[in-house]
Image 1 (tube, protein in one colour):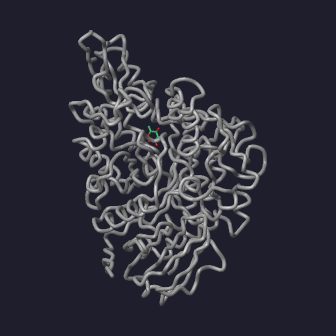
Image 2 (cartoon, helix red, strand yellow):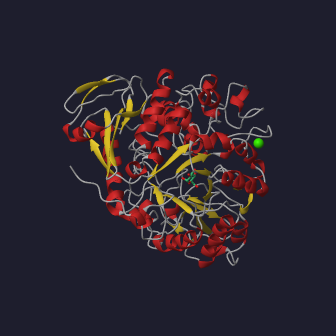
Length: 581
Ligand code: GLC
Ligand code: CA
């Protein structure tokens, strides 16, 4: 048995011991009946959030924006998107959170701006604009027939080329996302100065940190080379090797880190496309002074197909074990830190994806996944509605119900009408589309789930009569209360759960995900049956020491699986999970 390290007291940190609740402002709570969630709505629910036991609230972008990509296209970093409220509402929110001992984390979207941002409007107006160099402009390429082409073959994440032609100047600008989201040119020191000013502005106003949108994309390969062909069916290729960990990334992150340090601010960077743990360690290593932690994508890309996100993929529990165990042990051994998440505004609902969302399984699944995630080492992120076990949108959703640019652009690119490819794609949207997580928060059984007094901007999930916050807050056996127990156990046994070591148990079992957490302070065992059917599990010898002492402290079944002994074969009930300590 591998002995855990002694905990180094210098490496304890408040942000390691914290849990985060993520709010999607448009879909959380509407205070004025326009069908769009807002800051006053959030302010009215702070007690609900506090009682869950989280320490931090992260808001998706609330800044002025044409909303081409739900606020990830910012046209003014210093003012608030009007339907969400005013800067006074932000002050009130900061106060309300601080009063309850919680912190506020904002979304920093600085890989790109909106094309309506004055910088871009100005940059586009003329090649000699003093803002031209805030963005990335390149000359066209011409083929032997004199046909004009983009400067390289890079694909945009929202379909088509990553370059948009600007007729008047005869140049293209880069946009890794929508054409309304031009990429900033971080090589320009004036851009960096502006970003650092924004960072300070909200921290000075009382915000406590940032979630940083696709922050690993800010440094691009200076030559913008063509990407190798990965998808022969397309003219445009994913070129992430040329911008997901560019040559100046860590220099920029260090600049940011130095500002954050002054404020003891929280930071989590979103880092798609990077699987190399060593690359990520450069960003989150304890003494690197860059970021506290990052979101990697290995787990949430697990069901993407060979032709991308919206093609059928399949995954096995063994894949999940390999990924989780890799990050858990790597960060522990190397003094980095993990951000733990199964859901966010870009991902489908976790019970639908990883467990079972049949009505009779929802609560069990939500609790099982809470057990699975909540006792790992890292900072836990809970996305609004995850604490209730909200599922994906219903299977009968037609394309008219979807709102997300990623889904709608994908749909538009499917050739023909009503083909089998359309049908297959609808199925993939139901499995992986981002709108799954964006339906309104389900507060109670009143019209529109108590989210709004008028029709919401995106349809409410019709299951709100049986699945809502009011019912769960009243019911001590609900997923909501289970989550709150998980979060309080994390605090109570933090030397084990936050700072302990991690090892898989029964690594070969195809349906049971089990692991031990060890520390000088004690040991814990987590067992999760991912199957909605009963399974046999033989308690392995390597946990015999631990079983002699503890007992089941939390389980989604009662009576729970108590009195286990090594060597014993037990039947775990459908989706059964327990935490033994
Ligand atoms: C991030 C955001 C996502 C957005 C994209 C472009 O991945 O989480 O919602 O569409 O960046 O800003
Ligand atoms: Ca509103």
